[in-house]
Image (cartoon, rainbow, N blue to C red; front, side, top):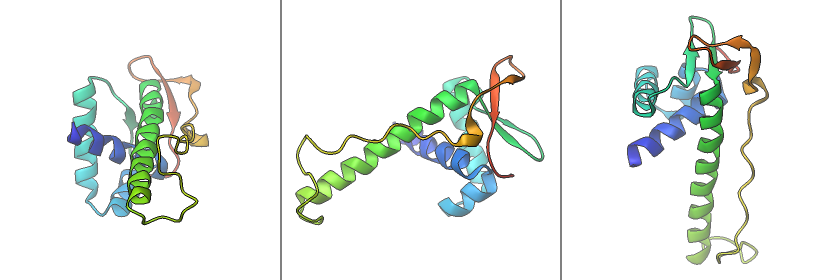
Length: 134
């Protein structure tokens, strides 16, 4: 389970950055490692999430849906860490520490990752561009 969570975080970073190389730099790993994680993630899921070309990167419709879930997962993980820190007394007294903690924000789809109905993918699915260059 931990490998897929790691790959979800890497996938989310690629979408946020718009490029494998920029995501790799922010994550402190090689571009090759990022590419390998995305390939393994797509293989595990059995569906293509990103369309890659020499100059662009775009999300498939499945990629956009999955990205939204990745964002929720990352917010939940961050919230969990904050709640534990609050329980340990590492945060100020104004931070909620109980089960009534803050609700995670809805997934933030990058404006550049909105689905584009006029851009079919190789499998007939809709695609949307990812900002940046890879």
